Image (cartoon, rainbow, N blue to C red; front, side, top):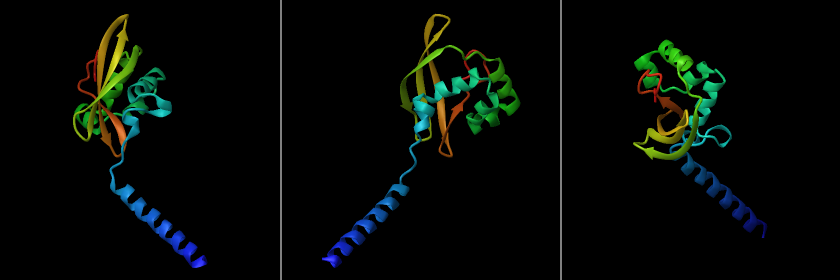
Length: 140
């Protein structure tokens, strides 16, 4: 009886350990691309950083591609001068490829409804915002 229980325990343990190896083979699915801290979307989180004046923190969530293209100083200047205090609500996500997603938001700026699209890239298991321009009206 004891041998049977020992065999059952070892079989279960080995199966569990073997199953863990299979989990590590799968690519990490980055939840912050869709839902950031406390269930908010990454766009809402980015907007909160802007409202709090944490522009250096925003830079940490800016894609390397954007930083290389525009430079840190110009991007920080953009973040300090742009207006991002309007209402946004996430509506959908479009996956353009494995590394880039487009998140669509319904926006309300000065009582006018619109659509805000934010491109997100996944870099080292972290979502980063891709800037398309240094336009103060719509850098995303």
